[in-house]
Amino acid sequence: VAIPYGTLSSRQMRVLADIAERWDRGYGHFTTRQNIQFNWPLLVDTPDILAALATADMHAIQTSGNTIRNVTTDHFAGAALDEVTDPRPYAEWIRQWSTDHPEFQFLPRKFKIAISAGAVDRAVIKAHDIGLRLVQSGDGVAFDIYVGGGLGRTPVVGKRLFREIPTAALLPHLEAILSVYNLAGRRDNKYKARIKILLQAMGEGPFTAAVNDALPSVIAAFSPSALKSLQGIMDQFSVPDLPERDIEPYLEQIDTVPAFRSWVEHNVSPHKVECYSSVTVSLKAHGKTPGDASAEQMRCLADIAEQYGFNELRVSHEQNIVLPHVAQADLPEVYQRLCAAQLATANIGLLSDLIACPGMDYCALATARSIPIAQKLSQRYQARERALGPLKIKISGCINACGHHHIGDIGILGLDKAGVENYQLTLGGRGGLAAKLGDKMGPGFSEDDLVLALDRMLDTFLALRLSSSETFAATVERVGTEPFRAALYEVRDAA
Image (cartoon, rainbow, N blue to C red; front, side, top):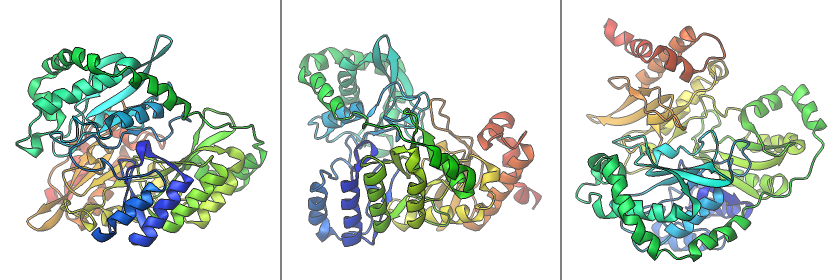
């Protein structure tokens, strides 16, 4: 189900809960595309599901196939302290332009676009076919355009090909890039059909020249109304009126309730308006399936958003739910409501806040299970994860990399090796503006051996870090991957 740029109203969340309860098995799976999947509907029920979605202005258009997929963005958009401007109006503008675009309904391969406006890139723009970064330019904003990123069987970090493109020229640039790809991209081999492969084959210079050659005719054919429509879209994205509230009860709870203090420390983020915060609701309770929410939990989130969050929810690409605008005065009550729904796990950014695709439990493309691995790891390290500090583990059940394993501090890739599940490890990956692909460590592990190997890796980290404040990522950056590789395979080497 499409959730444009991850934004939902309370009403829409309730409709999703109803669908999960009536036509699925009572839950939904929130994905790294900021969408939701229902994995068990009967084919015969599909028309009824689509009709139910339509009652809340929702659909499943362009959530699959070789077309432009859901445009994703920062889950804190409109609330983040570090953003140049709210990127969501531009995401909606692109969504309207790309939906049912007559030229781009049968591209060589699927096409993903992300947009970010913060000093910190929370939308992983360099791992997309096109990544857009809003930047300050004179008195207004402009766009740096990254092209050719993507994970999967051929992971590539996107390249910045266009700098400070003015707003009026954004859609023509996107159309020109896609037109070049549509004409020149390979259709004879789906494994070499993504734009990243075309960019490598042509080279950055020739590809950019081809786009620039296409631009004049694209601009000439573009309707002037396209730019005018942006202003109307922007008017729909104003931040709600956020009245000043007394925060003394909130501060008292922080001082007197350790569990609440821990939750605030991990799950509550600063807001651009004083006395407000953004709340990240973890869908990663220890031992549970990452990204899953029951119908009852979805309704609880809808109620909380309606009462305390100006009727707005966000889905993050990290498979959590965000309440972007919550008064700090209301945080104690929000926390109690989340506790009652088993949604108050204080683990955002910690080991158990891991990303995992559905894997072989649900996905026909998977070659190994990922959910049992995620459950096992979150339970095993529950008592140690605060001592380990910030740590991103990302798990994929096949080389399509829907779990983003290439850009995890620790990436886990499940493969089929002679009919047996085998898990390969990568180390030192990261998203953001300094995105980097993780280094493959070596031969894979069985499920049981994987856990023991991770024990050795994490013990090595604790022994090597300079202080308790040095993160896993910083330690790997400082010492390199070799000490960790040696620890991973010390048992095999000794044998």
